[in-house]
Length: 480
Image (cartoon, rainbow, N blue to C red; front, top):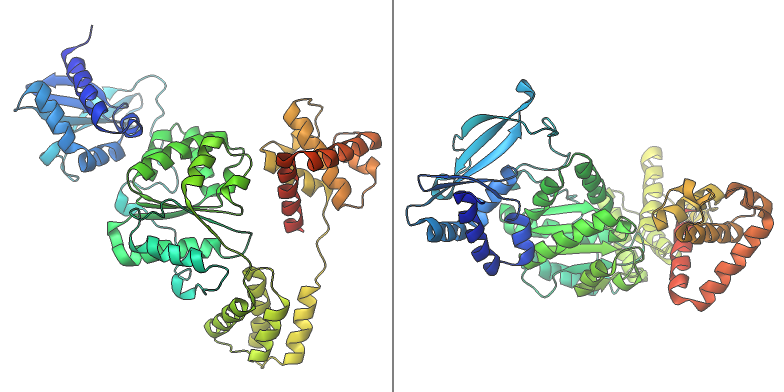
């Protein structure tokens, strides 16, 4: 039989549930536990200070109405927050904060000692990178990655224009979410951070902006899971007004992270927060990510970045030369733009090499010297691709351990990945079939040849399988 405080809170929840979206209800109201009801004061236990601050900022008026409806006009709200105390092992402390007008941060709480439930970790601490308050969140933006330094050209014109529109009205345009994609080193990170930097300039502390790579997000999630702090992790990200996630294709194969990000995506989007995502390919071409998350990516305004044309490359080089303080002869810059055209990073690499020479030798760079160095750069030999490197790339792509590929496992996903690894080893290395077989689980040369033909045939007849192979081959070539 329920106690009086449980009945009151249950009735309150039924009203709240009909008013707010399900995902908001599940995140912010289901974890609340009613503690007691005395003298018209309802005490609610919340998981942490994040929770308390967020409820006070966003839901206090709703809480007041539903609680007064159940208890009466004299009803009051109080929060209880438990935490462990290292100075007295086996006990916890409970902080009680008055809700509503009295619940301002900085108010001295009432502290009560309580027995610590069995199995509760003592003083687990915060995950590195997770702030205590909104004002503590570092946007993680590079000051030099701004719109002033982002050269506009046909390759990025649409994406840049959309980015500026987002920066003026984050979360309120039809460009939410925004999905920027393109091959490596075409300026995706620069553009994403430029949007964040512009928002900070336009809105200051009124908008909490956070840039984080998908790998950083994944690492934080794993750390939170290890410390049983998933709620703290989620609540931290729910404080953000503009969330920029770089290289979302790296979520592939990380099912726990994908599930968490899916719910976070929904919450932020429904709350009118701005999402900016980047990837090395279009949403429909990303493998290893579940369909419901891909469907969210497809909601986005997608903006593709392509390789810069000659005019854009030349403009980038002129800007880089000016910023370095070492103006190169325009004939040299034109020669670089004509011969280095795959991506922006290579352009910058040539510039750094030439300007470093000028600084060391304290001499002007002649066209002849520059031409010699540029020609060497364009014709630079590729790093040899090893079977070990191929194994790692294939294993990472499918989200399995490299040891699994060389094991005797007959699981379907392992067998498929192992065959692809053999196919790539034969295609990209000069190793004999016998050597490939030995390095990939003591398989003989006949097995390697069979795997090669199997993969080749499937790639010709199965479109999805062909995408797998193309993606993996791109990663192998990029690593060379």
